[in-house]
Length: 234
Image (cartoon, rainbow, N blue to C red; front, side):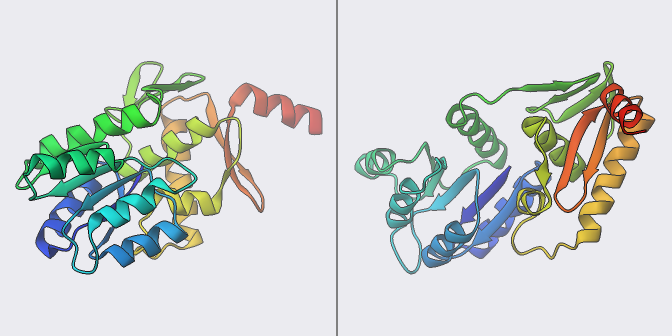
């Protein structure tokens, strides 16, 4: 999942970005309200982590803009404002949770994941296709019950492809989903990622293949279906 972190304190912004990226998220981090509005105008995010005390505008204005987006984007508010009326205003303004500074990173991550589960309609915790299974909460991938070791972006790629199956995952969508906006992504990087995941699934004995759809992107297919298609074409 891709997150937008809006925090003007440079050290905390860096700590949040590092922790969340290590936890398996793609993160865009900005330091002002206007930068947040600009980011939301050009990219899609699965959640917003928002500091209310921004240098150029009140964070509540960013929260209000978030509520007007066509796609629901959950928001966790970060603030040092401990007054009850401030917390009530934030929750009434559309925030899904309210975290007071200072906070523990592990607890914050747990609360973020809880918000994501609620607001995404309790998205499936377990995704399966053929003999491949993916546990969203733990990011554990198994083939016939045996775990295979996937790096963070490989797991994110597999999760995205399982969620959209049997549809095609467009290359541009993969770039947006797997990488933060600040990262420079080449076509070769996506192809290398696909190649590594394809090899690990094959070596693990998966009966699921990654099919390249020229000019569009990639999709998952069952090996048996792929063989039938090849026989039909021949």
